[in-house]
Length: 79
Image (tube, rainbow, N blue to C red; front, side):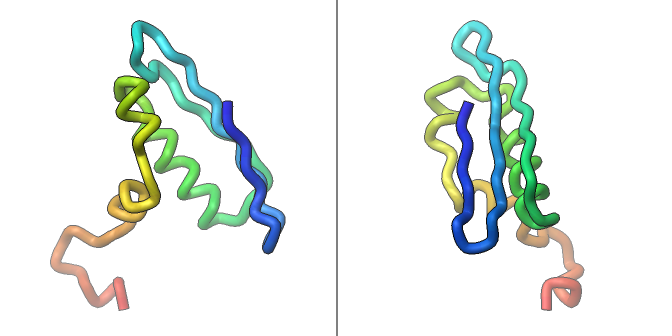
């Protein structure tokens, strides 16, 4: 379990994981946060599940941000 609070806005998120055989079997989150923070926590939970623990522990901000970057030709939505 890990929990963090953003002192600037008050967002609070707690992430809990279940580990089986060295792999993150399940990841869930709870919190009191804005939509952006909630979406980010959801992405983190998805990225964690199914990964070996050592790999999950090495996820960083860039891994999460990469999930929000457009991959299609619809760059106009990105402006």
